[in-house]
Each structure stands twice: as C-alpha cells, then as structure tokens.
Image (tube, rainbow, N blue to C red; front, side, top):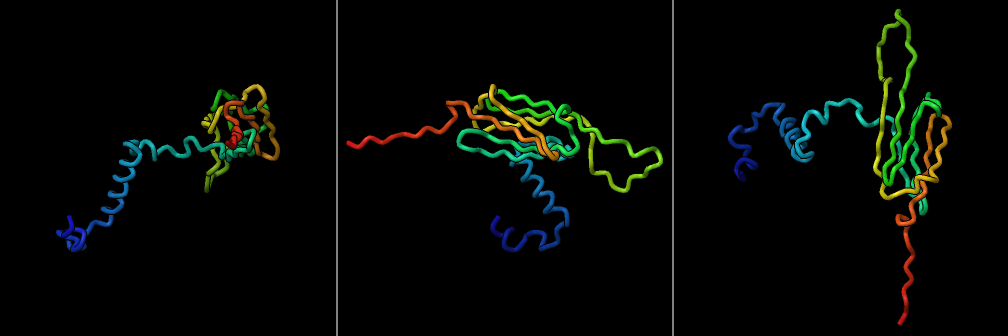
Length: 154
C-alpha cells in the first residue's frame, strides 16, 4: 500500500481519467450508507420550497419561498416537532407555438416535511404570506423552552 501511494505502482501514473471520479463516487456511496444512484438521481426532490429555519428563545420561525402562490393554495400542518408545507405549484402554459430554450421553473404538487429541533405548541402557530415568502412562527412547547437554573450558594 505504501509503495502504491509513493510510486503510483503499478500504473506509473497512467490512470484512467475516470478512475478518480469512480473512487469519489464509491466513497460517497459508502458515506451515505448505500443510498447510491437513487439518492443523487432525483432532480430537486425535497428542495421546494426553499426555506430557512431560525430559533428564538420562545419560538421557531420558518421562512419559505413560494413565489406566485396564493395563501389558499398552501397547506400547513404542525405536529409535535414536525412541520409540513404542501400545495401545488401551477405555471401557466406558454402556448402551443412557444419553443423553450431553457425550462427551469417546475410545476406540480409538493410536500416539504422538516423536523424541528424541539416540540412546538401547535395551538398557537401563526402563518403569514407576503411577497412570495411564507412565514410560520411556531411557539416552543413549555418543555422545549430553555430553563434558567439558579445556583444556590452554600
């Protein structure tokens, strides 16, 4: 093994240009536990809508990009420590005579489920939508809120 690393033995530097790519692919498969090609071949699966999740002292805040969607086209559900955002993104047809040169905007049903760092109080969740950004504020459940511990001096 040492000889191979130092002298590139037995190939003496005459490697296939795809050998390194194949090695990286094997390492990625090993790291991802054998998810293999199915994991990487799903274009965009699970990434729409794009979202940021932030945490405050008393709440989790999710901001999701949903351009062109109205509030009544979006469904939100919260359970314990899980948020689900679903709906159907519709893009108007360009017409039969239109010829696409690039098509990056996809249409169709989506369901994005994210696990939150802690449990939330589902009864007091608030959601607003403005300028294509959905904002969901989820107050933390009492047991998820940080507790200040007083130190007793002896």
